[in-house]
Length: 231
Image (tube, rainbow, N blue to C red; front, side, top):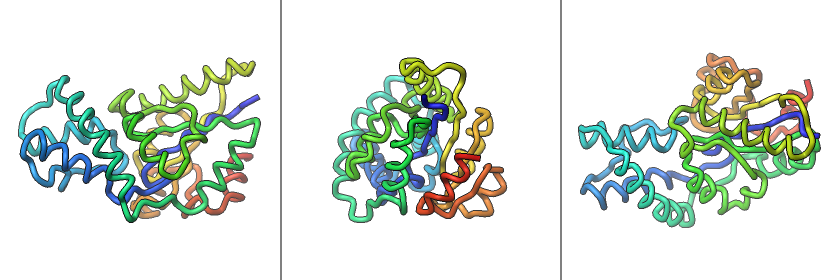
């Protein structure tokens, strides 16, 4: 029976799209508002899509974002994202990811899910090019909540529902894997164990200061990850 729920961040943890998301949002804001370079000087790393979109509206258009506006932006964003991901020359899966996911998916004690700030549809688009969606039947997404802790809670609830269906009882151990200090902080706030990987651009020193349970250079050393998992 699955006794662990592993929640993986996406960008910078599993793969890099080569800036596809930024380019897609730039196209949206150019279309809708005539705004060029919308994503310039707006922080993306570790944040939810809706928070990023809200920041662009507030910083660049200098006004609050209306609820219906967010939906219109997201609807325009997704097809552009699909185009940008497909043609991105620097899209790549990060070291060791397919091999580690294959090993984890084969373990009866583990359920794999996503804990990402991407809209769910955006996450699926990014994973599809590398055929990684098959590893993640559930998750928590930026379309669930702007707050990272809350979206992780949604992921855990969905994972627990799957465990109940398989006959498991009692709460699972939750492990959050990500590449930013925000992933670590959110996992800790949730009461989860945390794995930080230095593949998304933040320095090992910054990640270490956030207090992860383990800090890895990347996910290429599956044995190191599994040793931590089985402590």
